[in-house]
Image 1 (cartoon, each protein chain N blue to C red):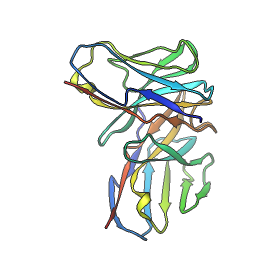
Image 2: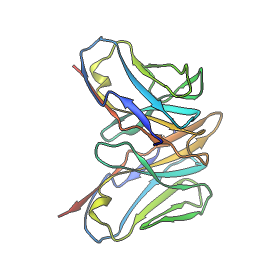
Image 3: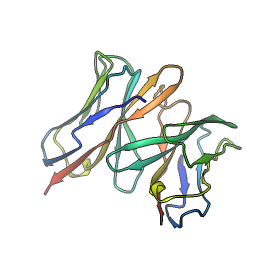
Amino acid sequence: EAQVTQNPRYLITVTGKKLTVTCSQNMNHEYMSWYRQDPGLGLRQIYYSMNVEVTDKGDVPEGYKVSRKEKRNFPLILESPSPNQTSLYFCASSLSLPGANTEAFFGQGTRLTVV
Amino acid sequence: GQQLNQSPQSMFIQEGEDVSMNCTSSSIFNTWLWYKQDPGEGPVLLIALYKAGELTSNGRLTAQFGITRKDSFLNISASIPSDVGIYFCAGLYVDSNYQLIWGAGTKLIIKP
């Protein structure tokens, strides 16, 4: 089954403790991205990747890192999480740039709480 | 950065009613997308619009790409309980980069 898989689904952590949220897709998609969703703000893009070893900042990259060593995986890294990074995070992938005649597929989300 | 204004923020409707929501911007977009998010899930694409003036249907859903390329609307006819969720518009903005800009969402709630 074609899918985008995020792990974990839920995570509670403490301020400053490094964490990684994994994202994997099995559709051989080139484009992957991370979003955070906050009430009243919709989806805001954190980072995106057009292909292996190619990553770029989105609208809200501060406090986050990503890597794209393989096509299928695009982990999101929070080196020193802070409470303002408490949010619902989504990973998405598409064959190429979403909107340009390609559909973006989303993972089920990771609800992160930083205390 | 570019912004999309999506309205209304939320809607309380009776089952069977028609629903209308829209997104507007001061910028021109190349593509408009409408997504639905069910509780606990990621957004799922409903309709994609690629040309100004384009009107596209998907079952009871109809969406249009505004002639000015600065707006889009989504209509849902004869709403049913499974229509509950959050609807997002997204616009593809092209300048020196490609940016997919998202609206803040419209939460649809059906009154019992």
